Image 1: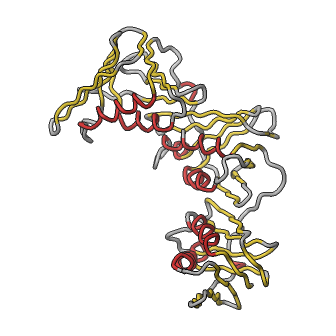
Image 2: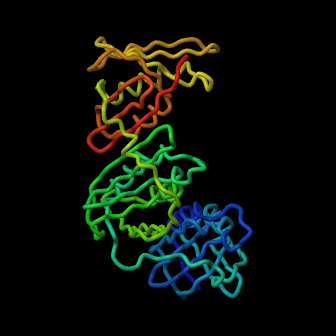
Image 3: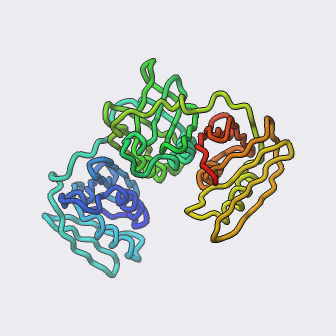
Length: 367
């Protein structure tokens, strides 16, 4: 194999693939990237056996096609530290030579045939969605997924698609986020499709989407999901387990409602949170016809009181929330105005931002 590569494009491909490469593994091949030169493209493939990626670089000149298995970290470091606009990569036997104008690196390769197969996107898409919308849906849900839960379904985001509509839902047991959007097209059966996608895969997918106007093609299989853009294909195993019946968690009988500007409410919450601590991680919200008063206190720091004018309908009420959970949601709202619907101090609140985003948050007990 012999190719001339644009260094910047090659570094981008290696950086993206490097997010998948296993940091620690008893299988040395999983710490490598598979480089394939064919059809006027250089394809970089990586996998940790849970998530796999194929990233194509068209800014190459292929003098001799072929494939090789190179150590991901060394290869990336060489490309990153190089000062050349282009680099020559030549592989013969078990050795890869990387040459710049004033440099020559020789690194040892492994057998390309030992690398696990990385799926490519073949056939028709089950559904297509605009890249910008998909990034938005990921941003509005991924933050609420559990980091490490024994309930495995909480460690991912539920994707539901049916009738040209798509929903993403996530929860960690203390909050739930749901974001909705429209598909460009779908070839799903009448019952639609559901899949719990690992957080790692969605984090990588978010980084892969460059053009908000480009369609992302998706295939949902029994135990895998495949996302495809013009430059990359991302494959992920699905999270096993049953996602909780989240519709049952969304409050239906709210009788109190606050309406406010998103940015102003976010500012008020952030200011009230300044005097909370890990031990007193809660902000008290006192609602009345006069508006909202936010208070927080901690024995070590002191007290904070924020008077926040807003529109409020319903009986007076006092409730406590974790301010971090509120600010997490308010940061991803894409509407200028939000509403917070309530029932009782010991019942969850329902925050809505526009017609396509809702967020359920459990109250905290404030002494």
